[in-house]
Image 1 (cartoon, rainbow, N blue to C red):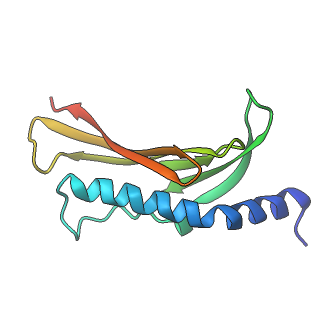
Image 2 (cartoon, rainbow, N blue to C red; image 1 turned 180 degrees about the vertical axis):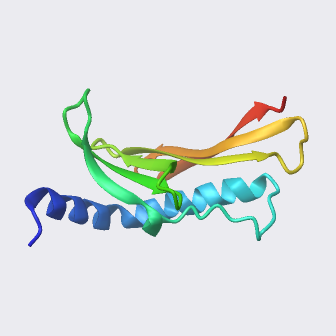
Length: 127
């Protein structure tokens, strides 16, 4: 038998799935635009997220926070849906830029409000 918070979390994740899948696809597109090959996968998959409800200290409302984990249970990224309809996601890439040797790709990020999704790659100068 599920508890009330678990049932609430499941209902919210189910409702957020279409937007979450849209965010994941947009992040994958941003990654591909950098020039990484098709067989170089990041696995930015909505179904791989581990979800929890998190209380926002500012609004005092619950956000739905999903975390991507690797096989050793280390954090690879997160997708947070705020109660106001906004969201933010990031997924670690941690690879040299495939087309710009002086740059390193740290992560791919996405953010937005409602169904509007914006993405960008976070680059760092290569040392």
